[in-house]
Image 1 (tube, rainbow, N blue to C red):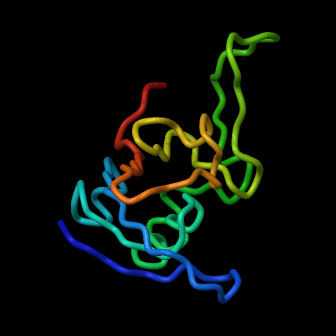
Image 2 (cartoon, rainbow, N blue to C red):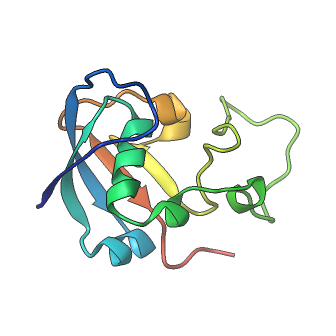
Length: 135
């Protein structure tokens, strides 16, 4: 395991706590980073801060994050008027690529607080982008 320390950019100059998480990577993300698991330390306590710092350190933003709505959706999904449970997605500009997923402790970030999900030391963040998908 490797420990990296990065600064997230673009917010106030307040002193932010450091958080260390376990990062698991699969598929294309794993290939780009060169390992399936690492420890990563960043300033802040949210998934947004983690992703900003991680993408500053590792050039995999385009493998995980969608720039446009069309990159976050795909044809072929079931059309239904009323789905069971609660279904939501991250707002535009914060969406994950189609077939990619970001998980916190095994749960999709969309089912938590999206990119504002709180992270604590020892949490597990999964960056998933498979090599293959079902058509």
